Amino acid sequence: MIEDYSNVRAVLAELKGALKTLRTTGEGYTIYVEKIGLSEEEQVEVLQTLGKGTVTIDFRETDQPVTWQESQFPGIWVGTFKNARNDGILHTIEVAYYPELAKTYDEDMIQAEDDLQSWIEASQL
Image (cartoon, rainbow, N blue to C red):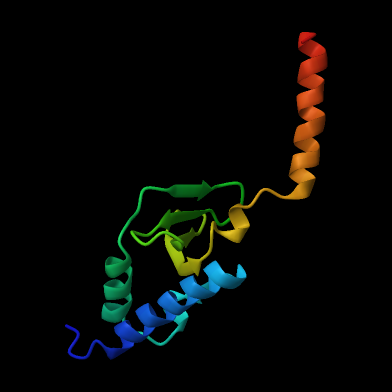
């Protein structure tokens, strides 16, 4: 049981500041939950306070798949990185418009343009 919530409040205040920075400068921010010195109870309290929003992103094309759940606070994402056995091995809290790793990269869009052109040509549209 947590007797002093000052660490939890400090993390939440840090996230609030990161939201303002994102909004004003576009700069994102990441916290590695297990590495910031919180007790397990404090970690759980932070994650429960953030809650769940309506958007989930699953990235599975890697040896360590990750799922991001937008929190109840838009712009704050909770990421769960998993190992090959699907065990959660790392949690992040990202303040971003969307998680950077989930972004579409230029190389993928170039390939998509080529693939779409092949479909257009094949279907004689």
